[in-house]
Image 1 (tube, rainbow, N blue to C red):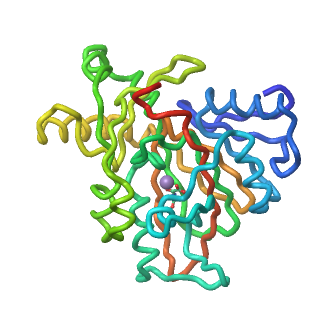
Image 2 (cartoon, helix red, strand yellow):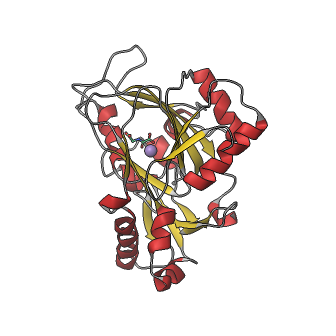
Length: 287
Ligand code: OGA
Ligand code: MN
């Protein structure tokens, strides 16, 4: 990125970028540099941003179509673009560990790719940290692109043509009951198991907590493969842990990264992050 300072965060992926104010109107070449950087680095952290919801949504639109937040959409049919991550309520209070919303968010502590359960899944998530815990509350990331590149050639050849079902109710019902209208809005969807970045041709596999089964495979064989791929992607040395600072804006590429919350003590700390997502270009089977 021409005028921006880039510092790698992990050997596989991730960059810390300074010298850009995301809240100011960006030129088209600057936005194009950010698009390129997403394809190259998969995760971009812009520290010290003075963000507002308005600037956040304006910036989101520069990268593509904002994605409707699926919980509100499924329950009420209403389109809202922001999700709030953490335990701070709209009136500035907090929910503790026992609150249903806090428990629901523990689903994010399983490795996942945002919106992988949608027919057109998310391209990137854009998350801004407003308040962060003094202890815990990090987010772990791994690259399914690097994981694919580490696979033996015969396993790459086995998985290249496969399709995988992603299913929100399958994953979330492990931690909480899913509202019936919300569940009905999210039937299982088939995706390519191996996705290719259109700009640089790098391949990655697409698994995570929502990945339920391989199309056409028996239950046990499916689970073995999906669990094996997840394990291969998430060895401790593969993980970049983002320890959030207030003012961080982080963009991550959901096409090729998995992430999970590290957890924190919601009885003790405040955590407030606002998130938008940019929708992908099309269903993965049409990529
Ligand atoms: C997310 C997410 C996990 C966390 O923001 O999409 O899954 O709590 N976050 O850090
Ligand atoms: Mn997430």
